[in-house]
Length: 243
Image 1 (cartoon, one colour):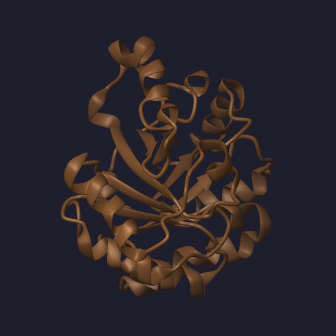
Image 2 (cartoon, helix red, strand yellow):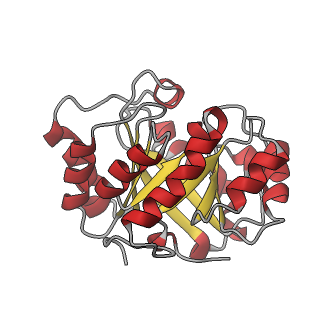
């Protein structure tokens, strides 16, 4: 189960620190999404991460771990995504924590299954922004400069626009995607049903549905079909970019 993330159009992001019933997980795993990403801003441990992975592994689905702490670095995922927050001045969230992980894990990592994410967090009231000290760019050009920073200077394969719980400015997302040369644009935030899924999927290469899984499961499930319809029912519907 190592299909490249460059072909993912729809992702469900699951938080190991949140409750999810077996019935709900079954529906999510049978939904037709391209992949699951496991990660969260707080409360992520080795035990709850490995437990969630074990439950997901009952199904033939792609599963990635977004590494937020070295304590929750669990073996057995198809992909490992390593986020660096581009719009923070706190070095621990750019390279600091990453160096700590690699100090112990680097000799054992399969680098063919690791991808860097250049994050820009645009909801300053979110847990992720408060935790990392992310500062929202004041103007579109400032935001697009972060896209250039990640794509052209750091050459990350994933540029991740994160609104964390609120639906963002799709014009900004679309403009960033147009500027990218190699990176694939992931968008997450406020996608709670098919209409917002369609809008986000028109703007971004890949959409990430997270909070709706826990707040509105039926709406979250409907986002998969919305993306499929937009892509003409393609099973993985790549929309250009890093291919």
